[in-house]
Length: 142
Image (tube, rainbow, N blue to C red):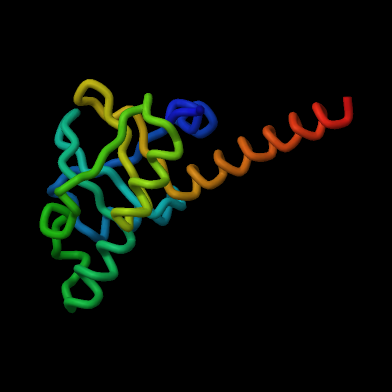
């Protein structure tokens, strides 16, 4: 059974974050520049929250707020769900599905070691299934 570590090993280890005092507009610019849909909110090395496109749509656009004058701390998701790198990928999929989330910070010993998306999880599960199918086909043909 593969773990979250498998996913982290197969993607860039670059983490993108903003501070709680960053404006929503600046965060959105970073998200656009990096072609990502979520940012970690960090204060030094401490994880404070996450800001996603969903937060923007629900807490800025629908409430008629200004992204230039609203701070990330006002709209970030601060009640975080995290996962450890040693957890099985299947547990991660279940956690994301049950909680209706698309991004999950990976935390080890109180430090953020990565962030995975639902796309990362699905890609990994597909790769693992392909490997299993190839092994079964090889076994059957021998």
